[in-house]
Image (tube, rainbow, N blue to C red; front, side, top):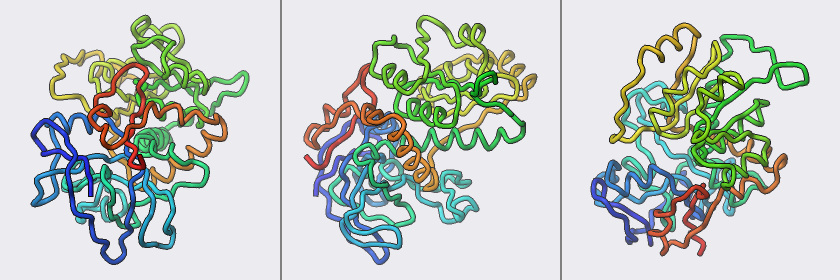
Length: 364
């Protein structure tokens, strides 16, 4: 069967042939339909990291997927169901992994589909255990391919709200009362989806990037009642100085300067969730005194967010239904283009201010 693979550590990507996996007892066989492309895939293709399965030369890439059950069933799954499988697999040892929270693994000995030690979803068939598969609710269809990037926003927002139970906010966006304010840094898929989640939670949301209001991303934000901030014209610090500081900041850029420099724009008792992973080439001399003073004097929390367990996948799918109900057709606008498998090279090269989520369409 066909697969899109890399030889980890070596730049390049190509179509390869692999044997179809046999389904062991209890496993579900899946047919990938759509597979999203993200920055992690591009870094693996560039040879920066990635780990093939034991004994294998190639790693099948792709960790964001929408699949169909083609063989096997469980209490929650049957043949023909649309599903979204998760990415990380338990180390089998630590408390977190043994309690369904492999995203909080203590040992680091986990595996990740399409990234570390396990093949991903850019192929014709995969097998998986049901506990790592979330069924897609009726009514979502192709937009469910956005689930994996949305889970990062889900985890960030959920953990911010849980941590903020240390204080009583006691306000909402009703007339005459102060709104909870959130800033999202970056308008890639994670940033856009995190903005929509915060909007559902009743926050007054501002999403920031370096582009003007004419882009596809700004249009998506405006359609959901989310303000767009072009930081090429107005800095985060300037905006917070004139419009007020933020209760929550979600960083979704992978840029250390952008993420850490935003900390002084938090309100007292605020929290920032960092979801991006800076590239190794970034060199940043931190304004350490200003950042530390701001954190200490304002009781701030800084939390790192990586990966997501099955609970966040199910949460994301339910929130997608809410978004579809409240803003019909909006999620579909996040899918910029679909490429056939043979067009994989063009798919991985797609760039631009109007490019949000590019996917490989295995149905073509």
